[in-house]
Amino acid sequence: MEIGLVIALLLAVLVGVSLGLMGGGGSILTVPILTYVLGMGPKEAIAASLFIVGVTSAVSVFSHARAGRVRWKTGLIFGAAGMVGAFLGGILGGYIPGVVLMVLFAIMMIATATAMIRGRKKRGEAHGEVQRGLPVLRIILDGFAVGIATGLVGAGGGFLIVPALNLLGGLPMAVAVGTSLLVIAMKSFAGLGGYLFSVQLDWPVVLAFTALAIAGSFIGSALAGKVPETALRKGFGIFVLVVGGFVIFQEAPALVALFSGG
Image (cartoon, rainbow, N blue to C red; front, top):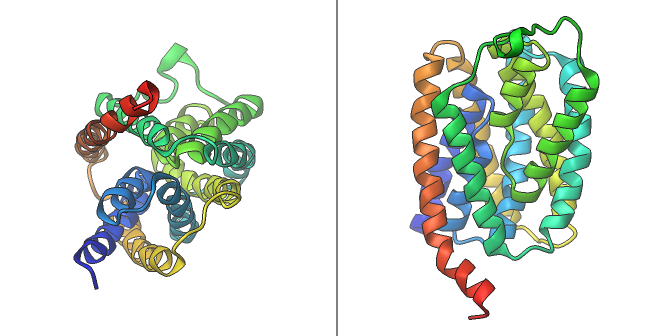
């Protein structure tokens, strides 16, 4: 077995831990691993990431649900809107040059990392509002927008969904994490459906990566609530920021060549 494949499969466990523990971070880790460790093309990596993260999130949902950390109604509304956006984003991504998709992905990473490092305001702190009811229209619009981002570049899932559920849906953080996994699974499969019109996947590799990510998700779910959330979020944010900068550095020459006709 090639050393790159061995490394990628070991890193798959980290992807699952991130999803199970924080309700996000799966695609932010998976796309660079598949692209730079396994050598997949950007579109194939994004499509594979959507499958891997979708399946892993779907499995991890049940661990959180048994602990009472999933709000099915909120998640299904957000997820349904996200599926529409993700499917359209997946189709659109098939027509965009791979280098452009990777740069957009890196920008999403940097924006996400910045938000993680800065932290988020507590629910009700912004504008002094505390949601008593479910703001359905706002959740639908946010779900659709996040879905577009997820389907297009395979990222922007949990770390956008969790604060949205926390602020808009009024869900406690632990419940927002569990509910976000339901949303991620729904959006990921919709985005994958859009990409499969233009991309073919190496299914044995994708399935092996998925199996190890699922194993990691059980570890993450078991650790959820036991690891200090602030330190974890900021530490992971710094890591994501570094990886995002690396992706920009790697893709910048190809992007310049693309737009300069070189």
